[in-house]
Image 1 (cartoon, rainbow, N blue to C red):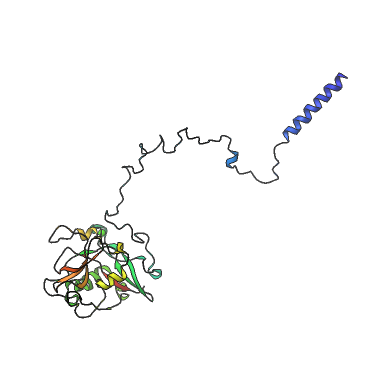
Image 2 (cartoon, rainbow, N blue to C red):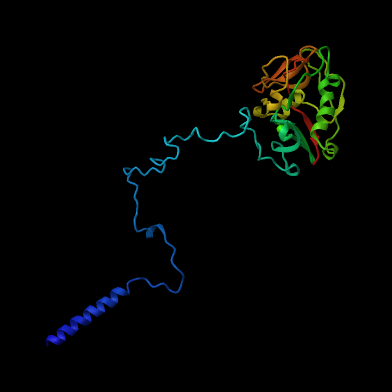
Length: 288
Ligand SMILES: [Ca+2]
């Protein structure tokens, strides 16, 4: 009888052991189960008191300072526009460009380091007719006079001559020049002052009139002037170069031309045409 009981107990123990060994779910032939968070053997609940802030004591900058002083300074000019669309690296392809996009075309000295060559010019698309794009430089690429002091209109301005000769040749290849339209430029009179806009001209490179600036540069951020390092470095009669830029429209008398103020507003009284610290934002019609 004792033997029977011992045998029965052994059987029970054996059956129990076998059944315990069979509680793991069987993997029906598939590969290894991927671990999930539920599988984590050592859960680490965040109870708020365990100081496990990843930036706690192991903050590589030591003080939890989100703006470490050791961060490398980038090479962006400090006056670079920040809210314009596009921006360097965000330029659209010329053929796909829409009004409001920025595109890159031609090159001109901009960082005032001639050793590294000219920098590609960034333009804002401000109008489009068919596949032709009206482009204005994002930056003021240079500074200079509208022209020699005296009664002057766009037709006789030194700026017009400079843009269509020196500037055009410095910036564009022959193939690019062929794709820039010769445009009939009409400059309206200043109706407040009665000053003349002068004769119509035909130009490849020009600057905006008052009416064009008001109609096409609706985003005031686009009107704000930003001088390149090269433009800032140009010699001028006064040292303060404040980001004004020329319009071709006549000012309060025939010896003045309009310009855009630092904040993007337009000063219709104008400034003397021989003011040599005013910036230049060339405009072209380009067909890619
Ligand atoms: Ca350069």
